[in-house]
Length: 171
Figure (cartoon, rainbow, N blue to C red):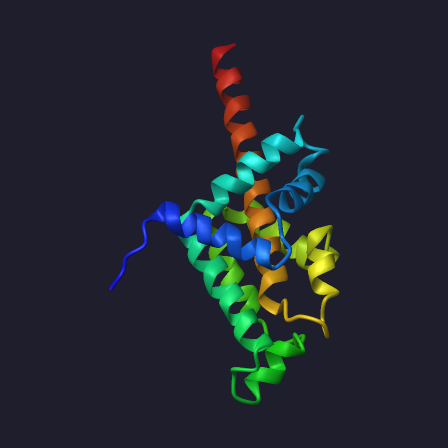
């Protein structure tokens, strides 16, 4: 049995996202929209935080799992009724959000509230993925991308809070 190291898994997850049409920059733009009013940030800083989230084992596993499910449903590999439920992104299904919560929970309650906001508002790439319904299955992908963006925004916010506290203690 071949074991992957974390760097290989990280690269595989980035490639899996790319195959779904999702680039790091796309996620970083969502993070920027979430955080621009709260801290002086750049897209580059947002990208750094997205990459940091993507390097987490929980995130890698969630990415690979979510995208594999969407791919299998695209290929009609599931039995009914779950095939149609996932394919149609049925509103009360919820398992796609539950899987994504594994990523969100890494960074606490800010991540959770950001995820809820993104799940409703569908900013940027999340909206694009959501609107692919009928062309390509993105039931798990859109929520996963929202979770990565929410977690990266939370990580960014926590980082700025720590810097503020350090500056306060130095004064």
